[in-house]
Image (cartoon, rainbow, N blue to C red; front, side):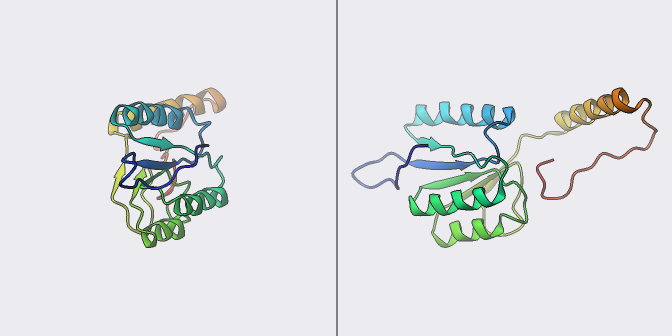
Length: 153
């Protein structure tokens, strides 16, 4: 992990914390790699500590971002409702928050960036049905696959 503080007049480089849910997730890894490449082109530093699918650790990383006075935080919350205290703490510290994929249930975010479009969701659902068929045989008509609101599903 790279520790760096807020950009000053002497140092124009901006530093953003990207608090992911899990760096081991290939999707998160690809998302961060793209952001890191673009940030390098812009002269911006992006630091991605790994919350390893642990909400308490994700909240500790929020505290760390506040202590380091980061210029902004990208956050992929583990769960929309459980991260509210962290978002509110970032708000109180004056650090802008951009959520990725999961919209937090409270606090103020500048934006929510999501890449899960209708085609991708359909493809994921079809893949899940195929896995169910492999595991259990025929899947009855009318089976509903749904995610909990605010979850990473």
